[in-house]
Image (cartoon, rainbow, N blue to C red; front, side, top):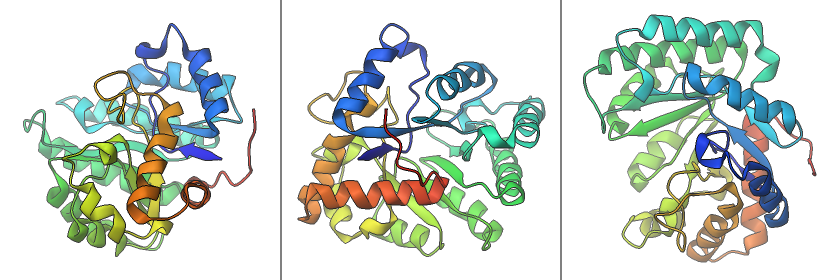
Length: 263
């Protein structure tokens, strides 16, 4: 059994064959799919999926940093409404975080949104799912002062160094999300992953983005999770079954979806 800790399967890229992709996940043994929110536009299709597939799809609620702008207060108000009025629908606060790759204009607003969402996660006993692109140091400077025993989460799409990983893993209850980039020849993760504890890793696709080899450049799918697991098993010289069992256990522990679900 595998779990995809981060997939946007509700996006329009899957509108023509979503049911087929879900069936392909079953065939591949990917039995739990975790759906991070982006902003107000993604709530309805995301919840539609978690309602249609309640044993497989688990929704999150948060504001993606790339959706942060001058109207951040309005966007956060909507997130707050969903989290506090419908807490039972969500397994995490996310996707949230910081992003300095696309635009630096609203970083101050991103930082404020980060703090607000972390505090909601602690209040509601939910993990956070952190987006962090070209902004690792800035994110850690925000996160570390807010960290206490109530906070847990994952750095989604981790591509950093061993030193970066150690800084995250010094925070008990935090994990690293490993995706298709691990299969890329020049990602550098071939030097990093062998040194990371399997007990703190989650598998993810971030589909429809960042498809693993041999599908690189095409639409990604949560059914490709085994390809990422195989790469980790190869780099760590351990059985694929060990990677599947431990990363699934890690994912279920973080999101507290302990039951073994089947289709």
